[in-house]
Each structure stands twice: as structure tokens, then as C-alpha cells.
Amino acid sequence: MSEEVKKPEAEAAPSNFIDDFIREDIAPGGRFAGMTVHTRFPPEPNGYLHIGHAKAICIDFGTAERFGGISNLRMDDTNPTKEDTEYVDAIQEDIRWLGFTWDDRFYYASDYFPQMYELAVKLIKDGCAYVCELTPEQMRENRGDLTHPAVSPYRDRPIEESLDLFERMKNGEFEDGKMTLRAKIDLNSGNFNMRDPVIYRINHMAHHRTGNEWCIYPMYDYAHPIEDAIEGITHSLCSLEFEDHRPLYDWVIQHVDLPSKPRQIEFARLGINNTVMSKRKLRALVEGGRVSGWDDPRMPTLCGLRRRGYTPASIRNFCDRIGVAKVNSTVEYSFLEHCLREDLNINARRVMAVLDPIKLIITNYPEGQSESFEVENNPNRPEDGNRTVTFSRELWIEREDFLETPVKGYFRLFPGNEVRLKTAYVVKCTGCKKDENGVVTEVYAEYDPQTRGGNTPDGRKVKSTIHWVDAANALDAEIRLYDSLFTVPDPEAGDFMEVLNPDSLKVLTDCKVEAALADAKAPASYQFMRQGYFCVDNVDSRPDHLVFNRSVSLKDGFKKGK
Image 1 (cartoon, rainbow, N blue to C red):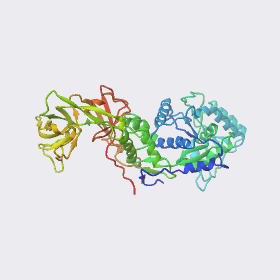
Image 2: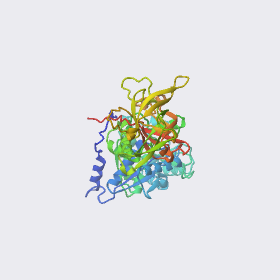
Image 3: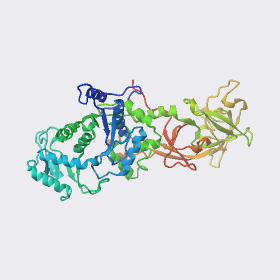
């Protein structure tokens, strides 16, 4: 059972029970004494990786790194039904983006199909496997319960007969579902995974790599330990749902003729509120047109997070800080945002952008004149230097920064009030212009030439500072504001399609940004002053049509626990 939503301390060190096991194993007299720690990441190429996979990647590759070991990347392509080379390429791109590498240790489970078949034949010869003709429905009916054993009338089938039928299965003589190969273990086991599990099934479907060479395919619980053993894996790190499968993993390792004997260790998988991370459900969102694709910035996929503006450092930091647990729990999505905000606060350049523009005309500034200001790009990184922004008579400001009739506590522009234009001058609002519908179209102000740089030599108080963009060279931009894809914290509690957030994407056009962004290219991220952190969209943005995605707001919604 899962725990309540977990609020990790930002400074907490990650749990390290896997490291403890490995230290014991490689110590003198240990199971792998004197051996190099060797892990693997084995994704099934039937979809795109998501944030939950990022945790597994960080554990698999990161653990090996800490012990000076090595990691393999292996495509677990034993089920041809949904597998595709598109996913193979995307998986590699995502792992490299996170900063991990496997050098030349890239494998496919399908590389081992011939060896797996021969090992299965050996199991039959050793009396450890048999061909069963129960249909899937009959197998479910005969699986027994805690007080009754499973039943198979084919369990005592002669070895020679099973060998003949298994070869004929391989040769394509039988239709799908007609026969299976089952491991002969214990029909009375309290662990139902050990009740003579199926290790091969018939599937007349072309494989993305082997084509029609095979029409029988190994089951994951049989294939996975063999793949690990062939590759010399020392520690097979799996998510918690495979804990009950570990006895079967160990049984296969003990009964096949391979010299390597890997150890399986399980860790709790990552759960995050306000999203779904089932590949089936994510695929349904894509195929149902509810999102623009696997890389939609509202998706928890790594390509979606990358397009949203998440950085490898923020995701790896998130995975490190939530730790490695033995019990499933749910982490707040706001903590993932917190980790991104921390990274961007340090590294993102500051610029000015106006999302809902209205013209500010400084009536006492000379027409046709302009001047320049040097502005620091990032107060946290002096090495990023300065940029030049221009200032002229007409500027763009946010519509919300002017109220003709101010409300209590409003200190921005209204007739008679002064504000500081960021890095430029103090201006006093003198009025506005409206259209025939009463909508304000222009705001008027006068500037104080003695306040260049925002200083007030006479010491007078100016309570508000607003950002602006010079209308003379401002660039048009499309801004996409993203919110949670779902309206409830636990969309998987019911029909997740019924709780989609209709306001999860708002597209703003005719926004105005600084001229310095003319050459902005993905994956560049910026802090739009007072607005949030934004990145250049890596699909739709072009020099003649700039598109920025809001990665995260400035306000941090994550609250540290006591």
C-alpha cells in the first residue's frame, strides 16, 4: 500500500540501502568480491520515457558511477506488439540528455533469442519445463487459490513430446494461444508467480528487429534474468513490483547454464501527484488527440519535460533528493518544480517580456530620441556579462500595470502616481486614452530626467517597479502558459480522461519581448522578469516566429516539511 503524499526535505540526503547491499557484496568474502559493479537499464521500447523512468535511470547508472562500475543500456524487446525503432531512438536521446552514457554496451533482448531458445530446450531436457495446451482462459481457471494448488494436465508430459512440440511451436505450426512453454516449479506455491509460469508463448507478429524469424517469444520473467546473466550484470536493480518475481528470477538463474549469477534488488517506483505515468494511459492521451504528442510540455515524458524547459540538472537533482525507498509513496509535483526553479534561478538569464501589452507614451521624452542602458544578464552569474537595452518615447508595459481607478494597495501606474521603470527612469502617470468601447489603448506619463538608472536623488519613495520593452525594436512572440493537465491530485483514482484540465494550455499572441531575444534558440531558458521562467520551444519557434513556453512560475509552491 502506498503512503501519503511525501514532502521531501530539500536538503535531505537520499536513502542508500542499495549502496549498502552492494558494499556488502563487493567486500572481501562477499558475493561479488573483487568484481566490477555492473548494472543495466532495460526499458521496453513501446513508448517514451517519463519522469518515473528518470528515477530508475539515475539509480541504475548513478549507482554504477558511485562504485566506479559500468552500466548497460538494453532494449527489452521481447514483446513485438507495441515495439518500434522510434522509441528505441527516443530512449537513447533521453538518457544521453540526462547526462548518462553506456559507451559500446548497448544491447537488445532480441540479440539473445537463439540462446534463450536453446536454454529453454535444456530446461525441457532437464525436466524443468513442459509444453502446456491450456488456453489462457483455462489457465486462469486452473491457477488455484491459497488453499488449492494450480492444475495442469500436461505437467507430466514426456520430455521427448515437449521437445517435439516446442520445436514445432518455433517452426510456426500452431496458432497464437494454442500452446505455451511453462517452467516446472511448484503448482502449490504460495507465490503465484512460481506456479509453473509461462516462459514462452506463440505470437505470429513481425518483430521490429528480427522480422518474421521468430513466432515464439520469451516472457519477461524468463528473458530478463538470462539477459542479465549473459551480460555479466552484478546487480539487477528493479522497481518494487518485481519483488514477488524475485524467486522466479533466482530460479531461472539457478537452472540455466550461464556462469554469471546476478542479484536482483528492488526499490520503490516514483509516484507524483497531478499526473499519470502509465505508458498505456500516456499513449491514450496521445492517440486520442488530448495532447499534441509524446513531447507535449504538459506530459511527464522526458521529451515533454525537456520541451517545457526542464533541465537535466533539475531532474537529476530531484531524483537524488527524493531518495531511494523500499515503500511506494507519492511525491508532490511542486517539488519537481522547486528543483527546476532552483536551477533556473542560478542559471537562467534575465530579460524583459510583456505578455499583455499596452502602449506607454512618455510625453516629455524627445520624439525620435533613444538611449541605451547596460543591464546585467544574471545577478547570480557575473560571468554572463551585460546586455544593452534601448529606451525611447514609446514603450510596451503590461496591461495589468495600469489602473485608471486604483484599488487599495495598488502601487503601479494610475493618474498622479510614480513608478520606477526597471533600470531606466522614474515616471509619473498623467492619464490614458480609450477606444470607443472604453478599453484603454494608451497610457501617458512623464519621466524625471534626474532619475536615470531608477535612482531618486532627492530620496523620494517610489513603491513599485515595473518592466517594459522598447516599442521601437520589440519583437513579437507567442507565449504558451502551461498548467497541470488534470484538475485533481490523483487522476488515476477514476477515469483520468474525465478530469482533464481545459485550461492546461493558454496561448498568448502578439506578446512583446526584448530585441536581445532575436537569436534565441532552444534549449535556452530565461527568467522573464516578474513573469516566470520560460524556454524557447524546441519544435515551433523560428527566428520569424518566436515561441516561448512557461517552464515554471516564479512563486515556489513547495513547502518544506518540519
